[in-house]
Image (tube, rainbow, N blue to C red):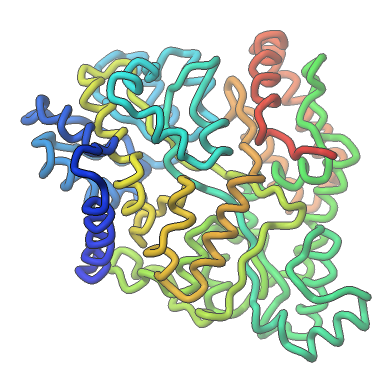
Length: 482
């Protein structure tokens, strides 16, 4: 569970070269953070991080480096994603000061900020000269995942976005192209609409199954919940009536999306309804599926990048390296599913030390290295990440991969973010389970809308409505309609 010497030297050499290219007087945000943090040498900060691969960044790379540079020890508190919000709130209410730096999913920020669990950061951003570098974060993340009620509470730090992966060799096969065009009247290419997706998926399954199926997705409810949010909005759906705050997920759009999602399972591998992240990854890397949608790590691992790391020994050997293309999902507005931001706990007794660590982590210089760690799952989120010549050289198709991630960052859709967001999401998760069990889509969504309305009424429709309207006004809440 360590970064390979070769990869470390490549990354460090690139960062060093970039540093040497700057005038000696030009201190970066990373440099400033290090110099200012030295006054806290000998102290320890506790950082909350998602358990698993994500935590290998501060455990193996950034934590030890920060200690070397500043003398501040970094203690990583690993927490499962499903428990992070609860543990952050519990610590805030207890007021123990056990947490200093926090990783928060952007959808949680209204709840956490309104509760008082997050420290406002504007004064520290000004004090340590970080505002200019914040502007270089890709606009959708910067403009939508940093502020609550006009105040900065966190730094966007993970460019999570769904993209479509497809088998270029299968799509570009002349026999497949000719047969598909004869059958459907248009070229075989990455689907722009869900109707095209279904036609392509069925065509490829009919030809290749059971050796290969036209498509597969992770279908376990926690993942499919995000895919429903994306697809529902791309098809024109709205979550609520903004005036009454009555739920509208049971609209004709919602019912049609549920119908189509279930129908698509028929041309996917048997048992796909139970697939999670790993099962879907294994199927695509083994060549069992011709299309899938997932987060950015699939693209790196399909190319074989970094999979020789011991921490990635569980990732199946890719049989499709060099054969994978990248595109935006049907509809062109992918979900910015989950992701992480860096915040400071309001109960921390070392707020400035925690803030400086966050600024250093998030800075242009250090984040460029972090998003290229093959094992740590941090995905590009700065404009410079997409254009970096070192990253583009990592595998032959990396330039196309990064260009697709950048396109997704420009048109991506935010996760629904409300007060008590998880209560609404849990209803969606249960609804998806019922869908796979064969229940009627209209009845499922009618029940879901009723449960959403009950939650809204408990919170207060006026109070929740203000939060929803602020979220809906953001550029990434709904697709721009011309």
